Length: 182
Image (cartoon, rainbow, N blue to C red; front, side, top):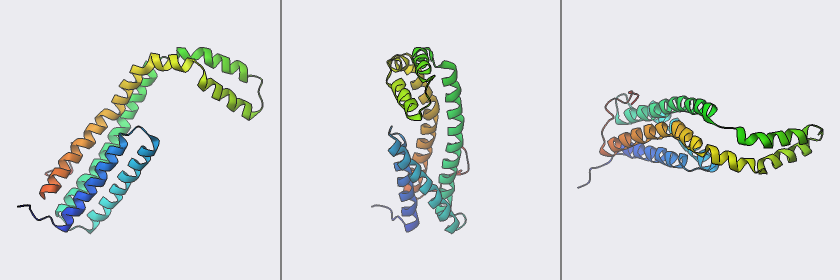
């Protein structure tokens, strides 16, 4: 026999569903998916604030809305920290020497240009130069490690909090300490 799910519990589970969709879209390596993710998570945050305002103090809805709100804000703060750490890693580890011959060629071509469209074509030519293949080949592992530093801990944080909240909501339980960071 399935337990009866009340209307508020359905709203909570649906909101977790939208939050989960935002998390899934955040892992798709496309700008459009990142935009959809940002819109979904921002929408979830706004709706959570509205639902929490309308909820009775101490209710299941207030508990989960507080948990969702804190998950998004704390996760965003941690993302700033991991992005900064990845940036420091990139600046220290990236080897830009493969780009030097191409940069020198561009500078010599651009030195006498006054036409902005000619400068744009020169920059486009720079992007097509063979230096990029060597640059990517030499720095690929650094980009992978930097990506893991920036995104790995945040994805783990969001997924753990998401699963914890969703499983509690489905069962009709409150999150034990919804104000905890972890």
